[in-house]
Length: 88
Image (cartoon, rainbow, N blue to C red; front, side):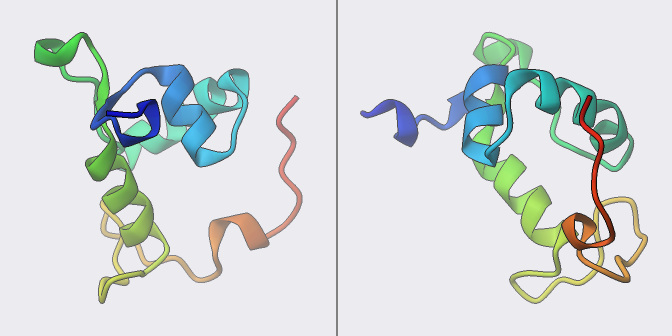
């Protein structure tokens, strides 16, 4: 199985799949965790279940028939399009 096919991913792998640096990912985690972002699973070396992460993102953006994100609040504009983000 190629690393890109792994179901349980490290923080670095999750960040890479999301297109973020590890530092950017760690900064985003605080807010994302409050919105139901999947937690690491201790049974699987504290890695995150990638399909759950992808599903969380899909719900956040209203993909696959769901327009309500995990925290129950609808997104009025796609999160990445509401202005410039300051990652520093």
